[in-house]
Structures are given as structure tokens and as C-alpha cells.
Length: 441
Length: 161
Image (cartoon, rainbow over the protein chains, first blue to last red):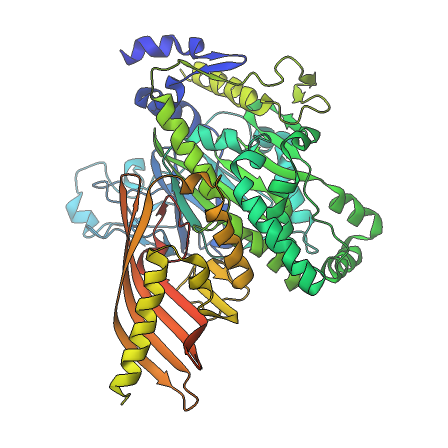
């Protein structure tokens, strides 16, 4: 049954539409985990999450429970969170410090931070006459096939072969460059709290929404209007409202017709950049003080180049959505065909004034916390979408908006001028999806 | 030892506050705060102050007004389905009673929420910094430490707990 469907997967994706089963079929979900999430580069975390030897974070890659750990050698390793003896999870907590080595809670097998077997109780007598022991590969914790780090952001791939991280990221690297370059010291560090929110919908629905420029003024109208009203009242009273109000009110003041002015750039592997941001470079004293620190670190010319980067969102398919100018990201962990966990993190620009951290913190709290004023309505839509796709009221999901008007240059699909609400990002993601799913064997 | 009258007055205030939430009287609920009052749900129980750290809620009256206006807007899509809460507040302990009438009070809460056909439970502790006014109390700071704040949220919180 499943085999028959596998052979037919190419029929599920057309250039401007996709079959609904792609979102709802548990068999296709299993194949996605095998052929996409457990092969490509998946974001594990930032190296500043594990500053000391033994520090670890549990992370899910596809269906595999993994653990990212800082070794005694200072390197960050990514291992399967599994004891090779009887299969016990090696760490049961989401994060912590393993100490000098990992120790299994079941029979006390111990392992170095890089996964190599350290000891088994009474190993020599217990395993005399067997091939098992320190040198036997089945006695060590299995490592992720490949681990790479780009500017402090750690990725792992569970496949031996494939593009390097740099090749995989391609132009979407700008997500991390933009974030780090905005720091006077050229790097960021984690703010050690993670917001975790579960969406009752397929993982692709979230990714498609991230660069959907048509939805904000519809979905987020209520928050935009509410923030706009209060913003005006504050301005009347004090002359100026905090920037966070502007970020929210833009959902109402940037009306539906204006979103076409944005642009998306769509890359191989499904990545995509949405350009344009709503007024992040005001002339207030905090921003001017920050710009002065930047000029001291980089010089005037380079500072201008850095601050002129104009990005709203970068989507790194299939599992990461980055808002670099606000130093936050959402990592996508599919839990099942209709359940998706998002892990939402905020970063601090090293060397930047406190006020700049607080400005993006306000956005993190208002938009990305579990009491979000914005995403509540997105998640409502995602749930409704998933419910509707289970229906036999139609077989296809349409991505036809501005179809045929995209401009392709050197493998990069750009939306044409005044076509910012194009569904090109969804088409591009599904193109990558079909390629991964087809080449999976 | 605090007087039974003080204990009673403080308990009645806490019950009134939860009643306003459950009956969706948002503006009356906001009016319980002083002009510089803050409603805070920390992201991390170890955090001591709401300012400058990630928070689930950290709202002054202006932000409370945004939240209220949002849920009252006809196109607040996530508010359209049947939605309601039921709070129970108990274990009320007055931590500190100042001569000027100001009070710091700890309590425990349990909240059941219904949205469409889904029931969720939230529970935890409140810590209210109350200031005495001629007609009762006003909240300077309400800290809400929810026991399940550290768990992943199945959907989100739309209004104050």
C-alpha cells in the first residue's frame, strides 16, 4: 500500500498546487522524516547553550532523540540519546550537565562526551570471550553522521553524504550573518529561556505561513488595530510610543495592498528570504547610541552596509525560521503528521547596548511567547487548515497566486516587482520537497 | 498574626479578581491595577524581576489595553470559538502587612479552560503586591508562577491567568 503510494509521489506535487494528502497522510509523514529531516542539515542549537564541558541539550531530529553536548575537548558533539546496551535514553532531561562523562541510569555503562565507551561495570569478566568491549562500535553511543557549525549555530545531518552545511545554507546564510554582524563583537549569545509551543497542524503549514505576505493584515488585523489605538493614545500623552507598538500596529497600518511591495527570494533546497522590515532603524537616542558603538567596531562604511540589510524573515527549509534583525528564531520539530513543536529562542548581540536587547526582547515577549498577541491567530488558522485538508471537499491546495510571473536568475526565483504576496515561497518549498522525496531511495 | 478582617478583605479581593476574569469583564479587571501596575508571568521561576528578562506575560496597563482590545475585536479569529475559564483561588497567606495598609499576599490557583471541545488545566501560585486605597486594594505587581509554565504549550494563552 505504502510502496504503491511512494511510486506515485511525483503526482502529488504540481508547479502551482499540491495534493492534500501531503499534509495529512501518516505514511507520507514517515517518509518525510526518513527522506528529509533525517538526511538534511537540521538546526540543533547555538553553541552558547552549552558553554561548559558536559553541558547538554536534548534535541529531536526527525524521529530521532539526539543530544547536543560540549565535550571535555571543548568541541560540540551531537549523539543519539541512546545507550547502546539496552536502548535507554542517556539523558532524560531537556538540558543539564552530564558531568565528566555520560552515565546510563539503568546499568551504569559510561561514555565520553563524544560517545566513546568509557566503562562497563565488571567489563572484563562480564564480556570475557565475547567481541564486546571498548573497541567494539556497538558499545559506543552512535554519533550524528555529520556536525557543523556556522557562526555559532550548530547543525547536524544524520546522513553521511550530501552537501556541506555551507553549500546547503547557500544564500540563506544571511540569516546568521545579519544576526551576528549586527553585534559590535560579531557574535551573538543565547538568552537562556526557550518558549515552546505546539501547533496542531502539519509542519509544512507553519513553514508556508512564515513567508506568506498576504496573511498578516487579515490574520493579525485585531492585534494591529488594538496596538494602533493604544499607540496613538500613548503618543498623545507622552509624545512617543515604544517601537514595540509600531511593530504590532504595522499589521493594521500596512494594509493588504501594500504587502505586494515586499519581495521574496527563493533558493534551491527550499530556503527563502522575505525582504523588508517595518521601521527598525528609527532616529531615537537608543538607536543612535547603538549606531555609534557599531561605527567604533566596524567603521562608518561597513556599519552602513550591515544596517542596510533589509530582511523580514529567512526560512531555512525544512526546520528553521529566522528573524535576524530581531535576533530570534523558531526551530520546527515535527511530532506527528498533525502536531508540530516550535522551539523559540532569542539572542543577545554581543557588545550592543542593553536598550537594543530590550527592544527585541519586547518583540520576543509580545509575538513569540506562549501568551503571544500575534501567533494565537496563526495557530488557529493552522489548526483550521489541517482540519479542512482532512476533508474530501477538495483534493488540492492552491499555490497559484502570481504563478508564472516569477523571475529566475541563476537558480534563484525572485518574485517580480509588486508581486510580494506571490505564493512563490510555497511553490519553491514544494519543489524542494518533491526532489527530496523522489531522491530518497 | 493578621486579623480575620484583613484576611477576609484580602481573600475577597482575590476572589473578585478571578471572578472578573471568568466573566470576561476585562476593563474592570485592568482597573484593579495601579496606574503603574504590572502583571507578570515569568518564563523562569528563578527570575526575580520582570524587567529585562523573557516573560510569558510582562504587561503594564497599556499592553493590557492592547490585549483587551484585541480579544474584543470581531476579527480576533482565535477568540471566535466558544471559550471560557473557571478559576479557583485558595491557600491565601498574607506574607507581609505594612502599617500603611499595603499587603503582600501569596495564594494558589487552579484554572480550567474550555475552548471548542478542548479542556486544559493550569495551576500555580500568585503573589500580589497590593496597595491600600480608600475603597479596597489595587495591584502594584501580580506575579504568576504557573506550575506548567515550563512545559510545552499545547496552543497558547490568550488572556491573563
